[in-house]
Image 1 (cartoon, rainbow, N blue to C red):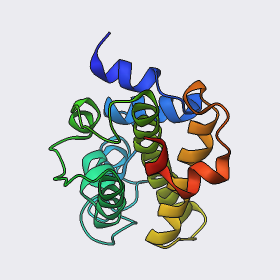
Image 2: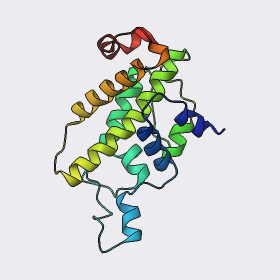
Image 3: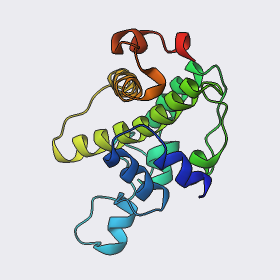
Length: 175
């Protein structure tokens, strides 16, 4: 099994998040640039990202290079005590062997969950802004990443017996 497959399918997130990350990694998610190619008369402006109001929306821009997304990735890497430079592509991001939150089972579990949760939160926010005309602040998005990552990690065997609120408040205690 490839490292991408292993990273995605062994993670402790719900199947819908694994499926989203899989289609994103394989370039099949419907970002504006893809929609423009399929139906140019129906798509949103492909040269505009709904999150940053700047660059064109592509998979790599939306999930790696958008200033909003970079802010979230920077917070995650800061929490892990690492510096980070965005890789060239989203697939590269998933297969790079980042130290993340350590080599312990808990550290690896929490890192996988956090990375995939961040992708899901970015996709949700993009869709909320397009279809519901509702946007949230970067800080709110980060709080959602922390909450859902903690929730899904706490359901795994690695965190059995650790209350959700304790995990959510202090990740570093458990890695």
